[in-house]
Image 1: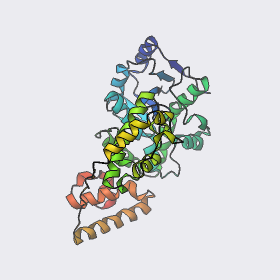
Image 2: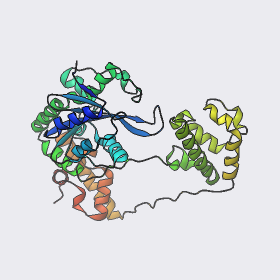
Image 3: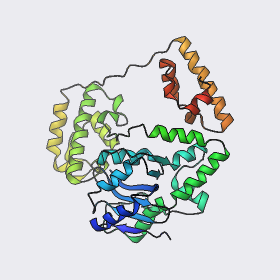
Image 4: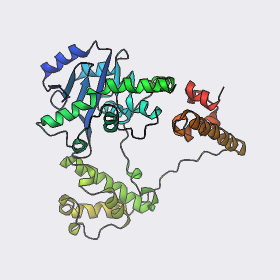
Length: 351
């Protein structure tokens, strides 16, 4: 059982900051609402561990956390996180910050070519710790939180220091630690904006005719407005699959529909009205121009791709980790060596 301190008052938060502000490294994880139970994307808990203590901070109760955000931005304090892809984006989205000096244990596992990269699998592999999967999709906005939920949350950071050391040890054995170090330095130069889906990004949207696409646009906005009003995720109003279907063949009578939220039937006349108005306008999406390569450039792409694939087999690392297809194509177009880190250039034989 992991011991932890639960923090849900300003006084406890201030004490936490005093305890961690001079730590050289912290393990960090977030629990969020991500349009699964309610409307929107926001952080509900922040888990923090030092080498000796574990904390779970309730930021729905302690809402002013600027001192902690400053610690996350402090380059002198390393933040150990498993899978930065979402966490850094939601921190940026909610608090407009860029966390710095990151050690991503999932990225380290990728360089070891692990078959399973999830924290649950790695904790079981290295420490025989089995995490409860039933809390992976739980509603983290409910209060009070159960002791089991809090323990589950604290487990996400309690073992990250030990996991980091295990991964570093294996990377040294495989002569790949420098790869990771360079990538982590590169991460510090990046921004992590959170992307909010647009109507034309819904699966099936680009196959619609111009009038259907305009219907999709107005229905997408109307659904989002209702979701916000009712504090429900979009799919609980109606699904994306239904959204595309309604755009292709608008219902004759919205009041008779099933498998949708009841508010649609109550607002049937309004839905019919906005769809009829949308039918009068055609919407055409602007197509992105495709990059054209000369025959010589195509040959250069093939040659560099073959070099990458040979290096992949040699160092036991998936090819896309050495260089993505997009990186290779952009390099052939621009000849900009800064698209790659030094370890990549060495493997790709770029001088």
